[in-house]
Image 1 (cartoon, one colour):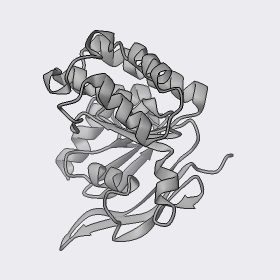
Image 2 (cartoon, rainbow, N blue to C red):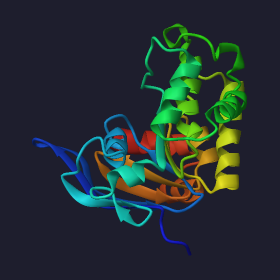
Image 3 (cartoon, rainbow, N blue to C red):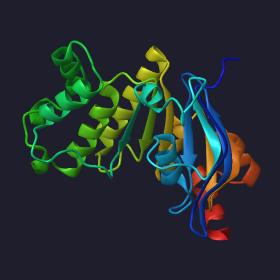
Image 4 (cartoon, rainbow, N blue to C red):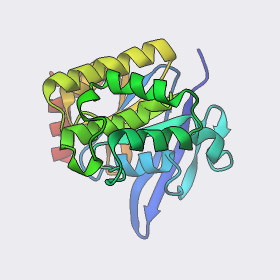
Length: 242
């Protein structure tokens, strides 16, 4: 079995007396989609922020590509990207200008060709020249996804990537992510409150509750463990029991 692309050990984050993430451990292998599931406040966003080097862990370690994030931050993050429906891009720039900025920050070659590819993949042709502040929420979601896949990352962190998308576009995005995973060996950490989406997308799932891992395995394994018919019932059971 190949070595993990992402390896997290005993990761902890405290804010004063509050422990947001409490000693969690997990790994992601090449070409794997790992679902990160849990109610609001469970520690999902804090975990992703630590994986992106945006906040410093209180304890524990993060390794990617066999290297420690704390000492190889720039090298590692050059191979990583992130998308969330809750982030924004510079509003005064057009969609295409935003993508050009990202491409230059990552030192991409053949920038016009690569932008054309991503715009076509995400069906953004009709608004590629539109000023970002005039985008709908669904169009903004596609822009942040385009930013994330534009750089051909080896690891992708996706926080609610299909929120605000209509069912047709959301389905196409999921198919695109699966194809990139198959063709390029992309490793993905995926969060969503859409339980059917989590079942369809995730090879394995870890469930966080109050900062701790309370369940992990395939969707079927987790459902069997808790005696439920689907992930939504597991989610409701764990969230309501606290």
